[in-house]
Each structure stands twice: as C-alpha cells, then as structure tokens.
Figure 1 (cartoon, rainbow, N blue to C red):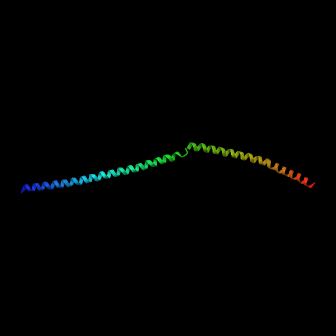
Figure 2: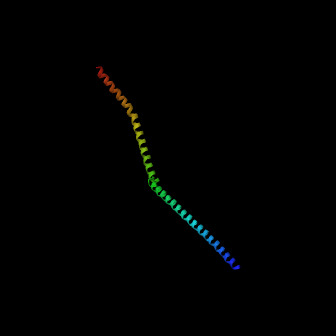
Figure 3: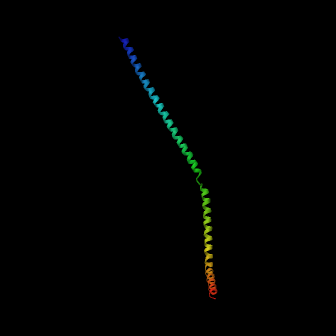
Length: 118
C-alpha cells in the first residue's frame, strides 16, 4: 500500500524534525544560560574592580604630593644649614672661650690656694 508508506515516511520525517527542534531548543537554552552566567561573572568581577579602584583612590588621598614633599624637604635642608652655621659659630666661640676658661680656672685655683695657705 503506497498510501501507508507515505504516511509512515511523513510521520518519520515529522518525528525527526521534532527531535531536531527539541535539541536546538535545548542547545539554545544552554547557550542562554551560559551567557547569563558569563554576564553575572563579568558583573561580579567589575564590581570587585570598582571596589579596588575606590580603595586605591582613598589610599592615594593619604599620599604626599611631590610639591608638598619638595617644600618640606627644602625647609628641612634650610634648618640643617642653619644648625650647621650655629654649630660652627659655637665651635669658633669655644676656641676663644676655652683658653679663657682655663686661665680663669687657673686664676681662681691660685686665689683659693693663697687663701687656704695663709
């Protein structure tokens, strides 16, 4: 019966096409799920990067700028230079005062000896 074979062929082709449609729909659903997961993963990573960027920006606020550092460094160098000059001046004064102090000490010692020996 040729008519029966045509119906069977048609039923077979329809079942094959239905199976193919189910597989394509499953594959499409799997791809959509994979894309959703990839988007969620990317969003999570971007959120972490944004948090890291904010933390670095906050940390950067505590850093000295080069301008502030240079001003402070120049002031420190000026103070060191002033201290060096003061030390040199006091060393020069000590060269003069030390022999005078020794002479005065000797004079005081001689006076005390005379007073005690009398």
